[in-house]
Length: 212
Length: 321
Image 1 (cartoon, rainbow over the protein chains, first blue to last red):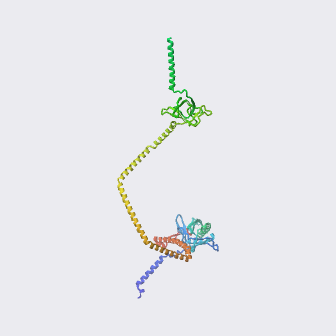
Image 2 (spheres, helix red, strand yellow):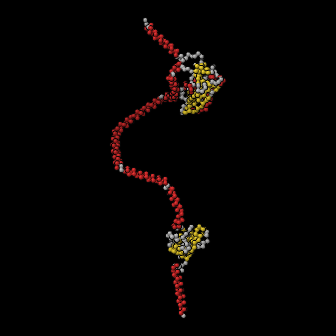
């Protein structure tokens, strides 16, 4: 009789196997297996227009700071009073802060002729940094689908890294009505982001003197 | 025959008596029948109280004439014109001056002429003047009487101010000050009893200071001797140390010069990157802190997920996830 054929060894192995199966079952929420309904994934997309290299100053676009925990892949829903929840089965492709940052990096090259730097430009010395704080980015359901809306408000701060001072500051509010479905909501966010990027480009052009 | 002789004798006697009386009157009146006089006017500013007609006129204290008349000046009623008559030989000249003086405190006034230098021309009447006019000046008495009312008013005012100054409150303050001075004086008197002790303490202190000064002097001599002995060695060591420091700086300069591009790149590129990395590390640190807090609060929620409802666009209401 070998050791593996010993009854005690078999009992121990069976117990370990059962424990492993129980542990795997408990890890279900951590390792998501889905709830049966597919999630629809959306993005904030900007299509670059220029093909040549911008000639303006270098500006480092920092990762936006998202208030009230808005920085994940979920879309927040503003209910009555102070209640918040999430939009079911609708997700961004990645964290919304990354989407907004990449959108600004691409769009400011077109709108303000800036050589913008993102995460990959960390080791490049830039005279200015653009800080963004997203104060609101939520779906606000109305009494009827026609009354649905989104909020989208961002605070922009241009910082001179040479003097360590604030060169300019502006708050953009781009809330609007949207169709009460996932596609309409995401289209509303894309339209709001497009307007915000264009206005930010004009604002940066007006204040770019601090970055030269 | 008898009656006629008596009448002649009586008449002669009466005539003698009358002549004697006249001579006596002249003698008594001191009338100088041979004397000649000259008239003058004196204009006084203000009152001439105490001066009367027939009042005496003196020249340097000698009676030389009298007052003939006292009247107001027709040209100016505030002034008084006094007509005097003095002997001709009195030298009244252009620079003579008349003053109104008083005899003691009796109030009897007289005119005293003065001045009159020997070479000055005799005073004569000018055009429009009835008589020569002697200029007048105020005497010391007159000045005193003129200024007395003002002096009295000033004195009264001063007294009123002194009274106001010396009110009850001020007197109380002065009294308190005097009491304080008394207290201080008493304290000084009491302290003076300890004066010998204080003097002894001061003497001891001076002795101590003298001793300390001697010790310092000895110390300085010792220091001088020490410096004389050790100074050369010390200076030599310091020079050696400075030479070493100089050599070190030269090496550092060479090191920097040889690696200038790398150092420049580090300053221009790496330092900003480090700065941003620190910023990102702060953000990451905050996220980790929140995660740890959630784990501490409810580990099961972190591992297995929470019971959160989500908004369903189809039903337009919250539903369990």
